[in-house]
Length: 80
Image 1 (cartoon, rainbow, N blue to C red):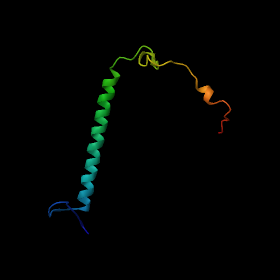
Image 2 (cartoon, one colour):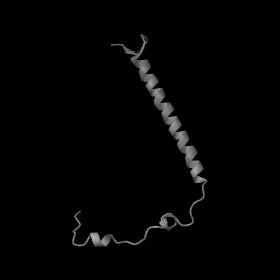
Image 3 (tube, helix red, strand yellow):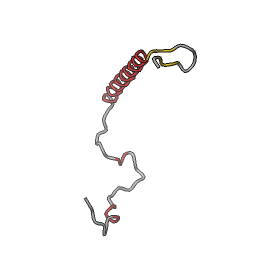
Image 4 (cartoon, rainbow, N blue to C red):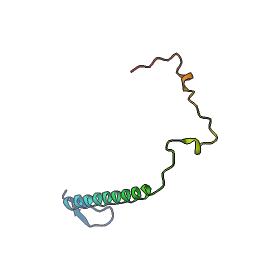
């Protein structure tokens, strides 16, 4: 089989031309991904940073903070 048939219609593409079109599609997708990633990375870089990073007290005011996970580990042996 030397042609790649269209799904609808009678036109056909050669395997080489279809591979070229697939490669162009990959390049377009990669170009869009890089450009949009650079744009949004630049925009996010311009946003103000919080005064204290990794502090959830401003966002989770209804949660009591404290490490109580030790009670779940009593009597358990860690295996590595």
